[in-house]
Length: 357
Ligand SMILES: Cc1ncc(COP(=O)(O)O)c(C=O)c1O
Image (cartoon, rainbow, N blue to C red; front, side):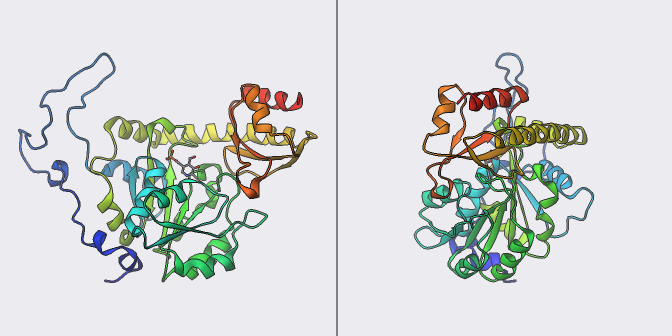
């Protein structure tokens, strides 16, 4: 059956036979001598477990548990999850699966997360840009006009670095317009800070929609490197061909499974509630400072602040030992600094440093 995914995917990927790793081939037996592993486990100091065997070639248990976390008892019809090494790997995989170097294009809406353009460029895929409007919402007519040029549209909601959520009606218009031309990827790395705005529910209706998630943000597991790709089976069948064998190390799978069980999810939600309280308090305080021009609404764990020029507040804070993210390189974000929300004491120290300016 021809689908949009099968039309978009380059011939080389369509014809690709996934790498036949020992785990994928499998077998039945009591002696396993098929993967050039050591047969006995080794221990290097305390704390190392039994890691002499390769992990699952695709960690299905982890993918299923993530799906259960997303769906909260709802039906998983036409939706599959794939565990990857952070959301960044999902971005890279999507570019490599659907774009042909020196031939295809992706579409992005800056200011947004820099990895979409980086992954495309590193694969010799051109990036078409339609800037966000002044209120950081989508320029829907311009995006719709450019859709036929692009294989993949990358959107981010809540968006990094602007912090806002894309309007659902705008996304629906883009999805309607893209059905026969373009894959629409929504990066929901920060979704736990605005869970009601997820668009995962739209995948059944729009098989060209793909959602990216991560455990690096609200779950607090950035060092573990675990993310997920959520997509219709029509799309997943191609993406899963390109993923490296054994993408998820056993300790990563174990830690991630613990984070995604009932207790782990409850802990993440409690942390998120506390963080949001600190964030809102910090935003309120910062808004009152004379050198602050704007504090943008945030549905994330960071705050975007526009300072009155010409002094670089990023450099000023850095001198005080407070490392934030300078956004001034982006023409739409002149004099803007993005500040991640940390503990109350870190935010108090940051606030006091700003007050002393
Ligand atoms: C929007 C967005 N997507 C993806 C990522 C990367 O996530 P991961 O750590 O899962 O690779 C980030 C990290 O800052 C991000 O802001």
